[in-house]
Length: 80
Image 1 (cartoon, rainbow, N blue to C red):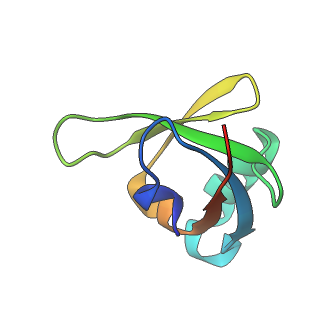
Image 2 (cartoon, rainbow, N blue to C red; image 1 turned 30 degrees about the horizontal axis):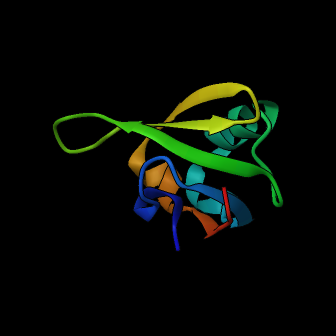
């Protein structure tokens, strides 16, 4: 499942990230904010129109991601 398809408030683990699909600047930003394989993420909010961007919790931070960036991140759901 892709991060942009993850239901809100369901924790998941990052399986892989297609860094090449994100772009260099955005990939660097996501790495600096803690996105990497094995990290636990949770989609918290989505914008009301078009659902872009989405807000995700990574650790104790909440990060806004474009839906296209979230689509490059593969996740698997985990028990809460």
